[in-house]
Image 1: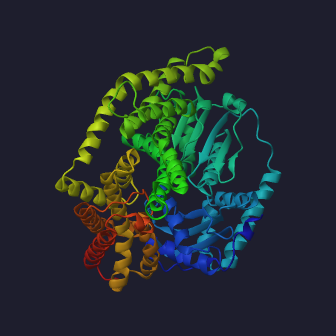
Image 2: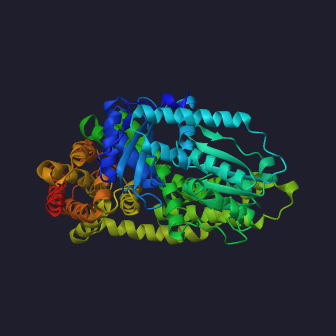
Image 3: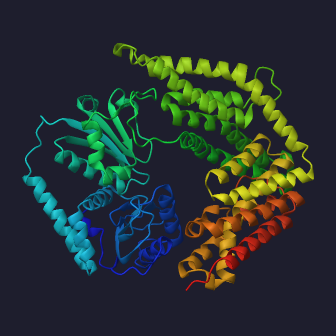
Length: 630
């Protein structure tokens, strides 16, 4: 597929009217929907924001490339937009954006589409070409410029002599979250910078098509060093012993020469697969807190499907028990058994993927076994070590694996094959099992028993305080660490004992707390239309459904545009909703579903009242606080 097939004169906005990031995304998405590129505009916009919340797509030099890839996109396409005044898009260089390329790729996009998107992205690293685009006055002219540039590059490659094999080699990997644009722009920039500095550069891309130009063991062995320009995890063990520079993918686009010079000037750290470096030259270090959070989120993201899937089936079994045959009904037994089985994997999976995030694949098995031990009563303990024990098991298994790698880093190469097949699994399992059996289980089982006992005997006053806090936390960052901490606390308690009424109340508290923000913004856009832009009023419509379904992220665009007013208002309303849940002892024996699981609620009327009151308070406070839109 040729680049011009992705471009369309009708997908060009030569004078973008928006003056902020949210309205710019909305204006471009409107055209995507009008031209039939996307079939669900709100879901498409949500996907765009999901990517923006990972890392801004404002790559600098006045360019932004918001992009999404999902099932709501009918066909691959690129929209070109130009803003004369420039828009604050939170770009990496802090400068306003004048040129936008909104990329849409369907979930099942074939390789031809993806290769064309990658090629288009790589053209945008040429400043002269970008200046030509800024002067374009029509969609046809934009397409013509891309065709000419593509043809010129093809001719240049056909005429270019082969690169001398005498040049030193640098290898690398580029990867971004979606793998549509930044991956290939960084690849092209690094190759060009290498040529200018006298290096052959071989870049492996980890994009939408999967891994391309995969580095061989020979490539890595011959190389002077390695550059990792990535926003996601890549296979690292193969670079053991090589000088290595690690940076975000945008550094590969904006500062390719700096990365290559670190290798050339021998300033790069020597990578050790055990997790250590011999020099501290890596400028892109991640803080300890960020590292812990990333490892924890890797475990939680893999755990949640087990919690939600198992929890919903258990909740359905309760409906069957109550309305269709009682506890002896075959359907009840089936649903309850399968849901319970899914729950038994919750802690082991959490532990396994925390460990895997730290120590890669060799840590997965010790982490899983450690989590399984935390889920069961061992060594005459009062109770299982539970969720907290599983967290400890995951982190310990990961760092035990890193320690083993360091211990065996000097092993003769002839015995390398023993490490993954014998040494790591046997010693890793033995060490984590001993620690869990003799240390973690006695300590955390007692702690888990104390927490469970405290929750079961909690007075009304204490319960109200806890449910208010949990409800408020759900709105602090709407899907971030505070939100996840509250949800995991409640769902962990619920998974321990789905039949406990107190655990159902905690589950209801986080449910109502998460439903308030989208409902509050929807209410505000209806009752106070003059306080919201047209794009915000359209987003408010979809938030009715998102709120009903317990999808807090529907309020993120509002919070991103005006965090100082939106977040405090939503926290207030969510805390009030949690307060009402604790006061009236509303219980939801399901870990997800919003109002769709309302039939399961104890005190169903107060369930609706809690969400309604909290949403009204947030919506009114927010809207009175906001200034009228001109």
